[in-house]
Image (cartoon, rainbow, N blue to C red; front, side):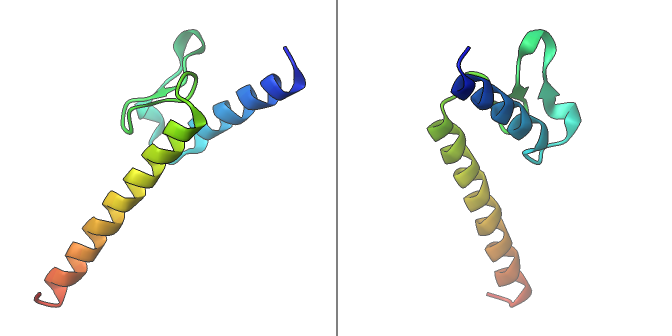
Length: 75
């Protein structure tokens, strides 16, 4: 395994472990790196797909926050 492949594997594992979902949502048996809460497979999904999913999750949180602010302001 090349140095780049080794680093990629390490970074994917770190991202899987620390991406913000609770540990009970993570599945890691038999070398897997999946999150059942955000539906990502950190072992198989491309970096682009992971980035797109994180962006979508962030946008959903932002929209929810803005709707809550509108409710508080009576809009």
